[in-house]
Length: 256
Image (cartoon, rainbow, N blue to C red; front, side, top):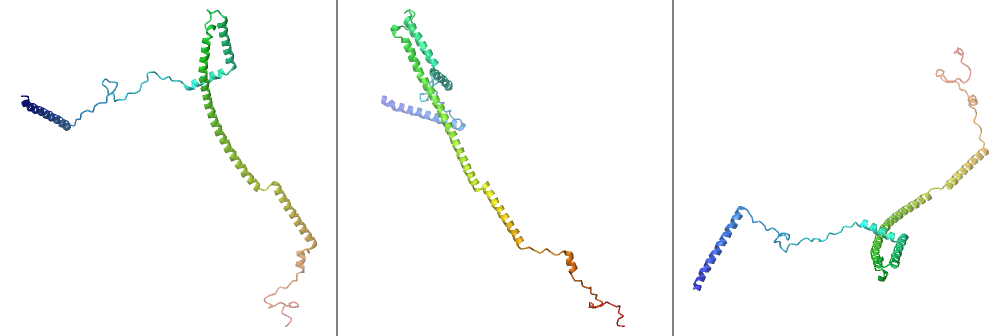
């Protein structure tokens, strides 16, 4: 009987599956025709209930990070380290230790807060704590001093380079000036040349005067005497047809 009902059950299941498939196709086709899309799934958040474990969570600091001004802390450490290297610190520290030891040694045991029987345990702890804090502070002050020294060294190097460049420039200028001055005539040289020229001119003048003294020249005749000494000629007339050699003109009566 079970074997006879198995095919019926299978057929019933197949019909149900086909109906579901047809309904899905119908719903999908209607959505495509209307232009609507199924919304994309939202990313899960770990802070929300039901968030996924695959989503990374931002790191959180349970304790707040202290913010310290490094410059102010450095100045304080330098001042403390500088004070520890002064005679005042040594004097006050020695006075503090002496008073501490004297109080806990000579005072009654009921008044002692760091008894001698315990080998001054509290004083030892205080000195150890001071040393443990003093060493890093001194190192911090030294580091800051090293930084300042490095900056000053760089500035000194830059200043030295500028000075060297200026010195080289001045040296080149001085060398060029020396060459220019070497090519120029000096004052003594100009004086000697002028003196030689003056000597030559004086010698030439002396030679000319001596030559004139040896060869005297006659003075030129006066202009009036020359005019008187010049012969006079009678003017000729074109009517006479020539100049008369002798005698005077008698007016034409001589041959009448």
